Length: 168
Image 1 (cartoon, rainbow, N blue to C red):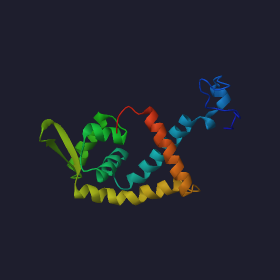
Image 2 (cartoon, rainbow, N blue to C red):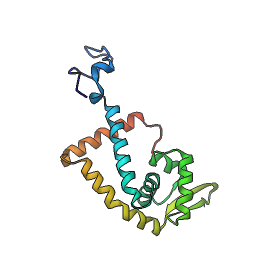
Image 3 (cartoon, rainbow, N blue to C red):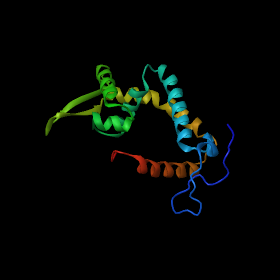
Image 4 (cartoon, helix red, strand yellow):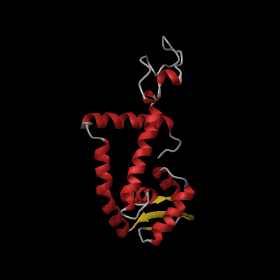
């Protein structure tokens, strides 16, 4: 798809020219949400394909990755970080628990809340998939230098702050 729009895309109220451009004027390649969706979908598809060789799903990998960085989380917190529905996360955790990769324990001060933590077996399983993930990550950012990457992260964090619904 060709770039169609040569004007300013981010026209805000109060700008000298606040006329809202049409999607047709902007085009898909200049519309960030479209590009972010396309990138995320391709990343997830590539990752899922590679994870099959390790007999692990993307959702399981996300849960293990998050739990390697955090001592324990609730199912709700883990669902937010893993960007998945709570029902999907609950089924994923059932499977990870059966595999011995995680443990769920009731919280002492509130027995209704279960804290999820990773086991050594879970750390080892994630350790096996991490090199594949990192290689895919490096490929995705081929030709992007460290400073550009840091600027990109800064913009992503600002966008996330603007749209997020959870404090985490």
